[in-house]
Length: 89
Image (cartoon, rainbow, N blue to C red; front, side):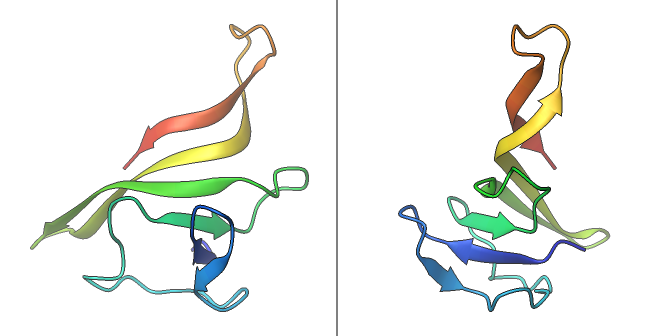
């Protein structure tokens, strides 16, 4: 489980309390929200942005996110890393 807290675009905290885990509720996650999470060392500015929220009777809530500021190995990039992940359901 991620321990996350919502932040607004100028990095001021506006939802969540430090490292208290949040649980999914139908209306908690909205498109465009930006969340900060516990990162690896050196990726302190990494954030999750909610792209889409889907609700299913069988699977519950599915949240599609964009991850910014995280280093992911990719030998085909000149730097050897991606700086972001465009889409994760």
